[in-house]
Length: 255
Picture 1: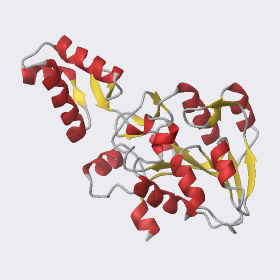
Picture 2 (picture 1 turned 90 degrees about the horizontal axis):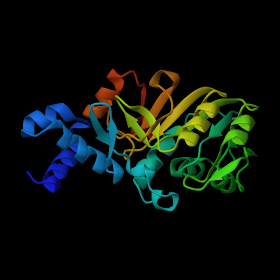
Picture 3 (picture 1 turned 45 degrees about the horizontal axis):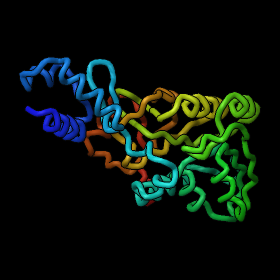
Picture 4 (picture 1 turned 180 degrees about the vertical axis):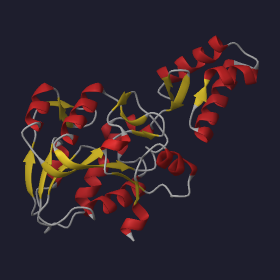
């Protein structure tokens, strides 16, 4: 089998099964494990898979540049955002992560809704200008790929706030890889913000579910729930639940 055909097979298997075990695939195809590992390295370098010990996981499509993310699963993000907003009590203090799903939350939040919002995203803060909510912005070095403040100064500033809830954006939600994102500084900032909230809710539109990125954020048991519109009967939902994730199904919440 030619390398191109092998890679197509690997990508199809990742889409259907959510993981590749290099040793098992090598035996199935009658090839050396080194050949499969080389294919996985090349697919990882192209951003099409994420190599892990013993194999690979599907790469998240949410690691594209910020401007391109708005076009990825917009309807799913709106459903997740509506369900997330329904969890905010009047007068609550909440932390909003950066990203296009949190921007969708701002769109879903009634402009007269009384609450306090803390964010390290200048785009989220700007979108709240005509809302009644009090807004506090955490500063630091701007990470342009995701339009959020990160780094030591941002983490230090985050340690001085507290909130009822944190709405966490990730790029991957996978039964074995857990909650992941594409940059170590972003992952550290997300953990810092989660530590300042009583509850952390994960925003998981369909493009994130079943995929993985390079850097771990939090284990499932440190979150109050994963808000997603992936159907409860979907096999990936069952796998996530078996891994300890609490799923909040957006369609049910929104309805």
